[in-house]
Every structure is written in C-alpha cells, then in structure tokens.
Image (cartoon, rainbow, N blue to C red; front, side):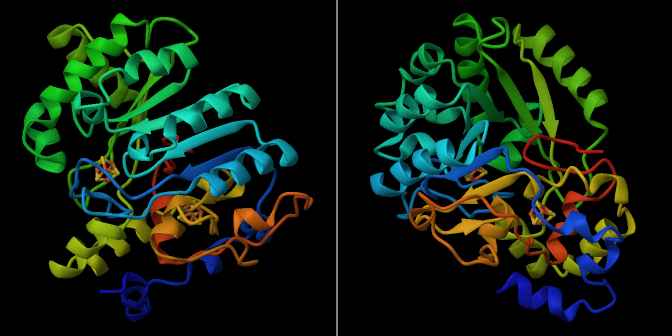
Length: 325
Ligand code: SF4
Ligand code: SF4
C-alpha cells in the first residue's frame, strides 16, 4: 500500500503548500541540524514506527557515507548532529562514528529506544554515551507500563525503566553536560496533550514511582505514514485522521517546521528534507546524495511537501524536538 497514492485519493484535503501564505516558508532557511538515519535495523518493531524498522531490516549506512556526513557537517556549518535509526546503536560503525562526531560537533544526540542497552554486546552503551557526553533522546510512549507496552511490545517499559535508572546513576538528567530527553507519542489516531503539561505528568509519575529524573519531554504527533499509515489505511481511518490534522492546521507552526533548518540523510546517503519524507521516499528536489556534497557550497532549496505535512502543523506543531508553536 503506497501512502502517497492514498493521499491523492483524499481530494477534499487541499495540498499542503496551498495553505502556506508566506511562500518563503516553503524553502530551507539556515540549516543547523544534520539528521543521519544510520539504518532501519532495530531490536523492536513498534506499531507507530514511521520508518518501519525491525529486526529483519538489512539497510545499514556504510562507513563511506558516514565519512561524507562528517565532511558536509564541517563544511556547511551545521551545529547539531542528530543520529537516528532503527536502533542506531546496531550499525556496526556506530561507536566509531560517535567518537568522530564529538570531535567536530558539541551537540551530538542519539535517538535510542533504551531497550537496546540491555541486549548482549550493548550493555556498556550508557557508559560510552556518558564518556562522549552524547545527549540521549529516548522514546518512552507513556509513563504507564500498559500504554507503553501496547505500542512497543510486552516488557519494553520495564526494560526502559531499568536503563533510565542506569543513565541517572551516571549523571544523565542531573549533570548539565549529560542531557536526557524523553519522547511521547500518542497510542493512536489522536493528538498529543499539551507538551509542558505532559512533561509535568511524566516527571511526577516517573519520579515518585521509580525515582527517575530527566530534562525535557518532547510530544510528537503521529505522522500518517509507515506502520501507522498502513494501520490507518487497513482500518479505513486515513481520511478521518488527515481531516483531523487539516482541521487543526496552525499557521503559527510553519516557521518551526524542522525541514526549514534540517537536512536528513538516509542509510544509503540519499538526502531528504526530513525523516518523514525519507519514510515516504520523497527525496530533496535536487536529488543529491550526501557523497555528492563535499566541496559544494550550501544553497537554499525548495522543500518537498505532501499531505503528511499536516501532522507537523496541527495544533501545537510537531517535530523531532517536540512542539513548535
Ligand atoms: S519506533 Fe524506534 S524503537 Fe520502535 S521500531 Fe521504530 S526505530 Fe525501532
Ligand atoms: S513532514 Fe517533513 S517536509 Fe513535511 S512539514 Fe514536516 S518536516 Fe516539513
């Protein structure tokens, strides 16, 4: 099932670009974040996963692509390297890459599912992260075990708590140099609650029940693509969900769309405006690979949009860094 073909059929929802009055917002501004998806391999297979990662995926970024990422990061003046996956830790060159990245970048962050840090061969990752002062951004769909396990699989919440405790023991969430952020996403076709209120709830529950502390909570709206998009299509809910997103369109969220300040790299080096466009195979308009870029100057580019973009501009706005409006 091709989600973009499905979008075409939903004709009562206008094209995203037509809703943007200030056309300058349809271009990249100053790119600050290089987001690198180092592969689709993951130890989990979550229901909401927009990149459809899992244990049987074989796409993994090779070392020459990682080297090109480091070159382009330095040449183009980004300020953040955001490493994602799959479970990025499962890329065989992951530790080498992190060590090289922290030499050139003060803001290196890794998006981790936490449970990977209990698997054989990965148990020393918390210490590795702390030594390299890498910010850890962890998906924890809910502070209640039942809700979280429903999305990510039985037992994943308990494992996540165990790892969060270990990260706290090493200073994560306490030492200003060891940032620990959590990510909430809804368990279905509804919007996340207001971010600061949800952060307060998470802090109260995780603190009183498990003694866990963390810095910030990011709330993310489920994007109607990948595994979640397939579920919406199967259950006949795609049109209803898109209508909800469109109905909540907030022009105030447009300036903060992450595609305006980000370049996203796929496992094979292909470039995208964001990780969501990567998931729907909608590359940058110039069609380049990161390996083409070293030695070339940064240029503004027009961003590619489709109807899934309404997920980034509904209500309080949504991005990999949480709400944007
Ligand atoms: S959501 Fe994250 S942890 Fe879950 S399958 Fe996708 S990449 Fe893996
Ligand atoms: S899905 Fe990507 S391209 Fe579309 S608005 Fe969101 S960040 Fe921008």
